[in-house]
Length: 355
Image (cartoon, rainbow, N blue to C red):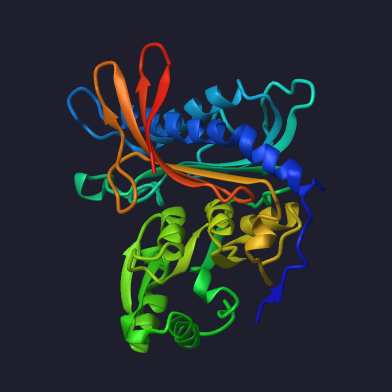
C-alpha cells in the first residue's frame, strides 16, 4: 500500500493573478505547441517521404519550442522535458526561459517534444502503420505550480470527472473498475480501459479482461488522459505505465478538465532510485493531481502532428502549415479547439477557426 503525498505548494498568488497569468500567456503556450508540431512534422518527412528516426523529430520539436520561449515576457524555468532520454538537447530541465522583463510572471513549464506510437520507446521502429495520434504538449503554471519529477517510469490510474475520488491506485483492478462503472451508471462490461505501456502492462490488461471490461492498448500518456476525461470517446479509464514527466503534463490537462490522476514512481534500478532521491521523491508515495500540479494558474495546449482520435495532424504546403490544437486554462475555464494557418517564410500566424 502506498502512502499519500503530503503535497507541495506553488508560489502563493491570488485568484486574480492566476487569471491574469492565463489570459496573458494562453496564446503563447498554444504557439509553443503549434510550432513544435510543425517542426516535428517537417523533420518527420523528407522530400522522398521517408520517415526519420524519433530522435531527429524530438530535437526539431524542442528547438522550435526554445525559439518561442526565448521571446516570452516571463521569468521562467523548464521543470519537465519529455525527450526519451536524449541528452544535450537545446531545451533541458532547469533551463531558464523568457526575457524576464519588468513585472514579468515567474512561471514553470513542462514540455513533451512528441508523444504517441513509436515515440514511447526509442528502439521501437517507426513505421507508417504507427504514425497516427502523434502530438506535442505544453503545460505552464506559476512558479512551483508543476512538480519537478525525475526521468523514471510511473504507474498511472486516470479517470474522468464522474469517477474522481472513487478509485485508488492501491486497489486491485477489479474494485476500481466496479467503482468507475458505478460512478458512470454503467456495467463493468460496458467499460473500455486504455492500457499504457504494452510491454509492462500485460498483467493489468489481463485483470481488466478478467473483470469483464474491454482493453485498448494505447501509446500516448497525455492523449490517453484526455480520452478518459472527455465524455464520448469510449475510453472510461487509463491504467498502466509511462514517463513521469508525461504524468505531470497529463495532470495539468486533467486539472483543467476536472479529471483525476493517481501515480507512483517505479524505479527499475539504483540509478532510478538516485534520481528519486535527488528531487526528494518516493516510490512509496501515491501522487494525486494536485500533488503533480499544485498551481492555480494553469495553461495546457496539445497540437496534433499526425491525424488522431481528437486532433488532425499538421498539413504542410510549400509556404504554409495548418495546425489543429486543443487548449485549456484552469481558472478561466477556457477550452477550445483552434485551427491555425502559419507562414513558413514570414513566421506569421492566423487562427482561422475556434470551437
